Length: 437
Image (cartoon, rainbow, N blue to C red):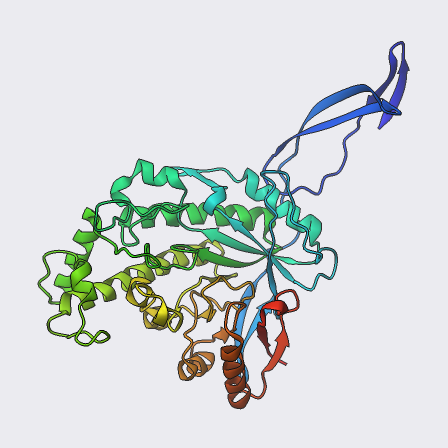
């Protein structure tokens, strides 16, 4: 900055200055002024436009390596055991949530940002994407956590504009209404939505890998209720999906399975039981088949989007999602089948290697290996997934302490090489973290 004396005072000229801002060109307004004690003498507003800039260096490579002792997460060829902190870093309201974990050598070596959802940050219209706020959010994280890698928690359902534009692609309740949520409650089996989401996800990841590649570590694909791919209305006293498209897709599924169905089963059919718990396989065939179809439709949707994501990053990043909440649903009413999480084996069989939570709240830690989804809570299945499917299982913050103790005890007995360590920031919730020695 140079100052030159003029008749009216001092004229300051600002020379070019270096910026650590990454991404596509961003527009800012720089406001500055001079005061004489408490009196404002002048104020100037300067419009600033940054240049397009990508992070220096090669894109990071994060993978899962299978070892005799179990799977190990790897970053650029070296073991990388990680804790994920999801911090409020959106700059849309110029607000930053202070965690006390900022700075170099933060105890959280991965810091995640949620892209989409209520903020509707980037997918703004049909094949229209605006990455301005995404760039600002990630630059904010890099400023406050310079040594941490980036976790990208990406909403795969667009905002409300999508439902207004394509009501025929939405999931409908039995009364014909569309389930109200802060993202568009799409029909998971709708082919047009799946294609739109795959293109949007590809565009976003191409942008992120181009400008932030050396820092991107993990992609969490989010969808459904509470970002965990739970079926619409599964936590309410309603049933889905009675849309025209949803009905047509189910009837096609039934025909492929040799079942003659004429409609989506309603409340009475789905709630029918023999003794209050079990259903009659013959009498309740259509209802049982629909529950299977609904889980399959969600799992297939996950597969399609995960394939697009893995292709976009050259299969060089960990890609995952929340799925497989089996035991939690046992006491959550419609979630038992309406949650849509009963197709876990399909994801395993399709080489979607799993990580997961035994929580009904999104876990803030993670261990994601080359694929998608969450683990089961059933201990015997848990141990099998360790060895067969490169899964790394965690208990998360909302699990009852009693159940954490039981699971941890079983793990120690069956896998003495594993250690239990506190979460640190999340330890107030009684949440252990599993890590390899």
